[in-house]
Amino acid sequence: MKNIDFIIEQYRAGKLVRVFAPSGDSALPWQVNGKTYLRTHGWVLSKVLPTLLDGSSITTRAILAQASIQTPDPDGGA
Image 1 (tube, rainbow, N blue to C red):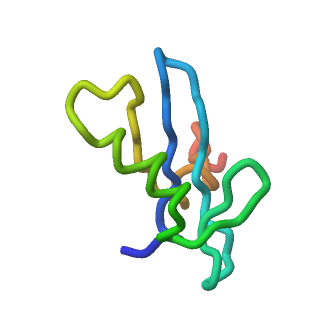
Image 2 (image 1 turned 30 degrees about the horizontal axis):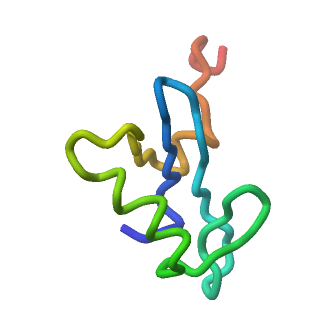
């Protein structure tokens, strides 16, 4: 799996705080709040890594990028 396969969502107290979305640019793969960042940029790491610890006030969820773009038709296309 690659960065372009996932969207990372972060929640605090059930509210969406930020979304790391694939930018489509291999040099700066993450887009957050209209800015693009390196995968290993210090700001990105400081926002993602601490949330992976038990007891973090922020919940991090990774979802498939295709799942958020394509919503299945409940009528099956009929």
